[in-house]
Length: 351
Image 1 (cartoon, one colour):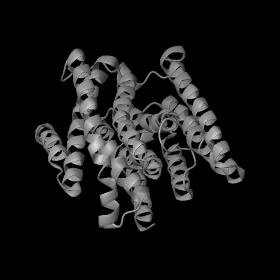
Image 2: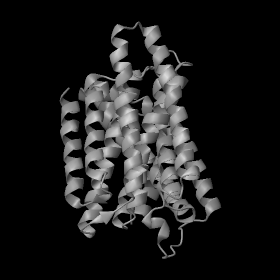
Image 3: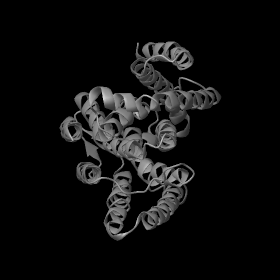
Image 4: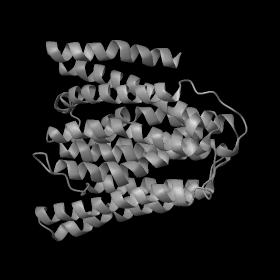
């Protein structure tokens, strides 16, 4: 039923977006069509990566899901940067971190916990993720905030570029550590299951759909960015709220649906890898890549977030670390994470 609905969003929404772009339909209609199309396309990305996860194992599958899910947000952010809306890009990156850690992981814990009293996932993965969350969000994002107080814009940009290079290098080193040199240490219960599950699509078909869907998302995202100014004027929404809530939820639709689906199937290692792995990828790869890409745009982007963005990301990271370090989850922990997301969402709305 859900797959049919997502197919309708794609096969009806995308042609209408193309038509609307040529016929110059109103921004509100284009915004709704673009959001619906991206959500539908994200569903296809999620199904393709789920098929690849069955073939490749939970860790590679989770990484693929996070990567292609974040590709959607990366594309939206590049077009937003091109339009000179740096504030919305930083806000959407904040929203991605908050959405993955609190909304996606919270709903995954909750949905899985309703069906299963206690769910387990790799404690080694949890401790590894905790260390990187502290580094990426508390160290790498706080340092520019503190040091930039006494720096001019040029030095702040140089600091951001240097930190971005370190983040990308450590992220790639972390993948090599986890997937190659210490692969056995991170072996998860999901990988040891004897149950054979058939993928929905073949490996070749899955890769083809991923590439096509990501390409179409690039076109739709460009149209979506053109509607942001109208949203702010019509509803009185700030760039912060549009980025943190609207852009982040639409851009991460693929991870949202996939992580919750995996949790309901009791595949918590994949679910956690999608939610937390996606957060780490946003903080340590997507964000620094955008800093470097912005150097070729009219307005460069630094790693200096606003105080509300920084405090909410740090709070979310500490809460997730506290609740997930034991390698177990239940519905109440999920509800706690979701409640934290609601509180922050209300705060950003009222700013």
